[in-house]
Image (cartoon, rainbow, N blue to C red):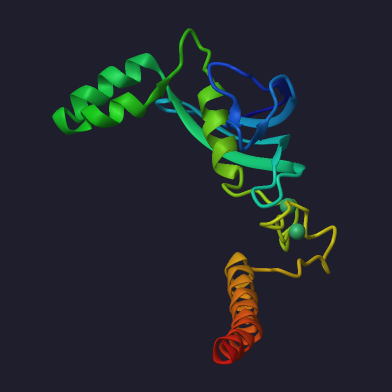
Length: 190
Ligand SMILES: [Zn+2]
Ligand SMILES: [Zn+2]
C-alpha cells in the first residue's frame, strides 16, 4: 500500500469542481489530496480525501460565502487486460458496467473525474451563509439578518388597495351629504 499527499490546482475545464453559478472550488484554487493506493488483483484501488475551500453565494440573501469542503472518494482502476478476463468470465450482462469502469493507462490513472464527482456530491445544493439566514425583504431587498426589526407599514399591497377603497367611499359619502341637502332646499325655494 502506498500513501500519497499532494496539492493540485482545481481545474476550470472541461467542467469546474462544483455547480456552476451556485457553489464550487474556484478555478486554480488549491485542492489538498490524501490518497491511498492499494494494489489488488485486477488493478489499483484508490481511496482518498480531498480538502478545498468552496466559494458561492447564499441562496437566500445572495451574500458571498466560503466553506471548507471535505470529500471522500474511492475508485477502482482496472488493468486493461483485467477487462478482457472479466469479459470472458462474465459475458453479455456486464456490458453496461464496462462503460463505468476506469482503467489504468500505461500505469497511470486519471483521478480528475473521480474528484469532480466527489466534490460536487459533497457540496450543499442550497448553500446558505448561516443556517438561520432570513433572506431578503421581499419589498426592498434589505438583508433581514442584518436588520431583524425591519418592517414596512403597508406590509401587503392588498391591504394598501383596501385602504385606498375605504378612503374613496368615505369621500363619496361626504360629497353626497354636503351637496344634496342644500340643492333640495334651493329647489323648494324656487
Ligand atoms: Zn444568507
Ligand atoms: Zn424592506
